[in-house]
Length: 358
Image (cartoon, rainbow, N blue to C red; front, side):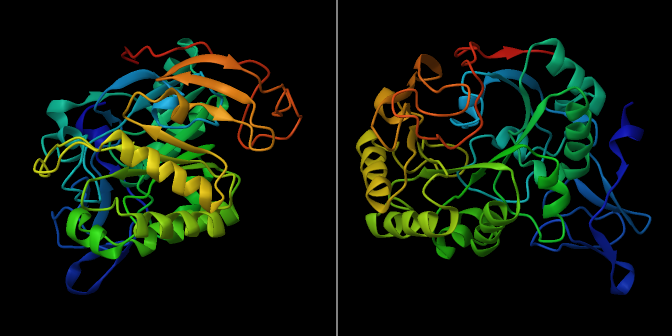
């Protein structure tokens, strides 16, 4: 494979004036001269055409619990094969995977893996799904879509862990290949996106609304709460109200704790009390499934029935305890349906993290 495999013809671009081309994959619409790379660094103008420079190059493969993505309503307890590439189309100052998302020496940190090899590795290792994660899979859409097709041929589900910063043109192809998505809603203010992500909020909200309205993709949302930046009660209340109105009360919302990293090391860790208060606000707004992450909080990470309050999925970190959702996806106590994708039994992967090489 090597360099020839990585220089893969890309989609979602068009010719522009002055012998440039325009990338139409994400809202940035980067205009590129010959040889120039887009903001994400992995899409490049080569000979007047767009190429994806990381096709077939991964920054690592790990088998994780599905709850780590985080997805709490998508085959709980199951194993997911996770991988990413390099680069990103956001510039988050607080990035917690910056060693991969900001990487420029792609070849040096990557291993080669064709889509079929990834799908086969997932099947051989008993994984229910493959997750495109670590960096944002939107920027390696062609590789992710081809891998998703190979996975589906073997009965493996697919998961996108993404910031949702994608154009309306590319959404149908990309999410049409996915069975589930966790979208990272960084904050609920344009100021935050501009200041700390070098991006914009509106396209993310458009993606979330479109996913809920137009697709069958199972959707969960995560917001990382950063002290002094996006954790005030007014902003959280507006986020929760928008979530209920646009995505409905059954779309799970995760509030995760921040830890100082990358270029935002002058903020403290998020107190557990902040996550608890955010969860209370979300429940008060009408959300049925709200979770806390990056802290030890079994109560905030377990799933309860919205109708009768029965414990449905007991979680301590990524370890599953009691499980009372029946084979039809209903509460075993009151028979109310539980939003999500479930099977008759819970998975038993536990909290393990296992590196593999396809």
